[in-house]
Length: 397
Image (cartoon, rainbow, N blue to C red; front, side, top):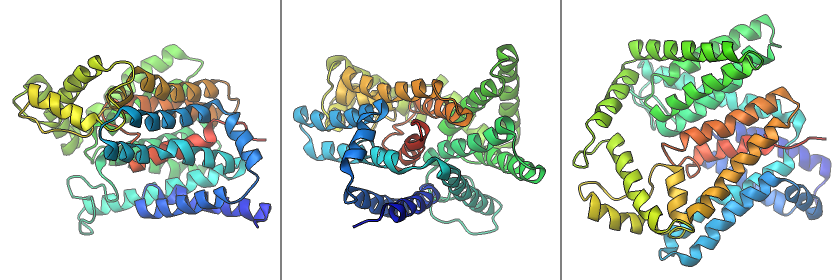
């Protein structure tokens, strides 16, 4: 029914399209995903696919992580919400294994370039809104110009793009003079864009990325790398704090809210503290297997109304670790961390410098940012994480 050569070529075109659309549109990316999945499911050669999937410890851990969410429905009371969570986790069961079996090494540069082109277009529109050259649209505002998604998702994805370009400039060093100039300018403009938007979690991720990149650039000079980390990061922070009104305002606000925390005052910082406190109470009572895949909202409501009635109820603790611990307990948390363990472990065994460096950076950055929100539930961030994971952690023939 399908000719192998034509099918593989079609897959690569679809993957390039997906890389371009995933930071821009939910509908467009989902349409490409549906086409890829249905084509893959009906393209036969199931034994080869099965063998490739079953031989990857990363994919096995990913499928087990999804399966635990399904099993967690057995002791949940809210099946409807449980099914909603399972639906959000399907990337780990189906999409990652599918992408893993169809990506090809010779096309990876095209995937990355398509993704960077999308970020470039997003950045251009962000600046046009910020300079009031075009009217605000979709999610963008003059004070927070993130057009296609909220700043919660935009800044982490922007960090990934910054890392990819910085790796080319500072580590690969195989650019022509003209491409070096363009790449350096792109790197600067993305970094500036990072600090005219309001995503504090993404900005923390940015500073972590800078530290990781410095250690990778100076992998054989640890003392020099450490010195640069403690020099470059404070310098960038100082410049951003001095010249970016939104960055300085949100940093000041976060510090003020933290220092003046009270369970009688509502702010984004105090809400996260309350989320953590109330979630921990649930976790202590259901440590091993949690309350079930769908019962976070109801269990949280009980604790919140008893302990912090002035705060609104939540369906999400804005912390991936807390969410998994409440839903699936230590079993679920260990399962999730196993995915990251295999990513890091496989990267250390990698001989290709780019795969090794990016393969280490990606899980570490997500491990950091998941402390501030449930980034494996959001469409944009989960898709970016899964897409890049599909080719970073395998041996190509």
